[in-house]
Image 1: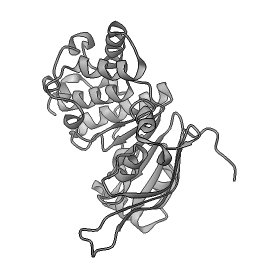
Image 2: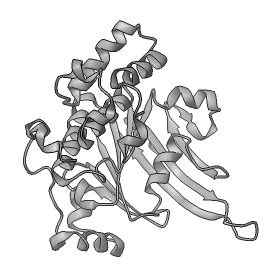
Image 3: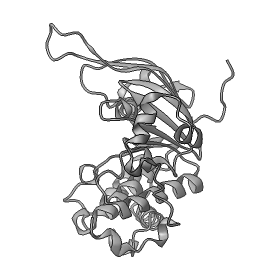
Length: 289
């Protein structure tokens, strides 16, 4: 077998089962032989309906599976199988080398702690920076994700920002330690369409500029239609189709993929990025979220 030396993270034959609702019930298969490769500077989209296993795949990478989960297969990162690491070793990877952005920034940002503290604590813990250096990096991160007046924003609380801006801050926190892999789990679901487009453009720009490998998890093929480089479609814990975005979305081979595409408004693949660069979206449009 030829080894892909450009891969940042490689998942092979990943299987996850969870306990049944009672002792008499058999264990439930959540993931059934998932294979996936993440490459630097590429966005790998994972699509499927609720319960398809797409989010569980991302959680397995970070070792955040529910209690009682049994996992098998390999998740290789920097020559190590993450499934074999102890909690201390995994903590050195999680947040530092592999980071995650969740659907609702309210769950990842502490409402009673200022944005600057949340950013600087993160980088000081993992990178060992001084308080001054950490604050300078935090300001740069907010500028990178297009937060207006980033220096002033450091002294504000999350509730003082719109939903779209909070998600940008959550992305800044995830990128604070310069990770190689970013897992974005439904990062736009809680946002309106205009704000959604801005977040997607931001992810695309960060991927291109920083060379980070992004796993974009979404139930909406329209969301990833113009942002993902390749698309993986999951159903009932297994991959039913995978390939370059254009091939999968314009010539789907599996009936389930065709069903997902047919369910989009107007029976077409939407282009949420058709209005140009993310930075061209006025900030006031995000205040509604």
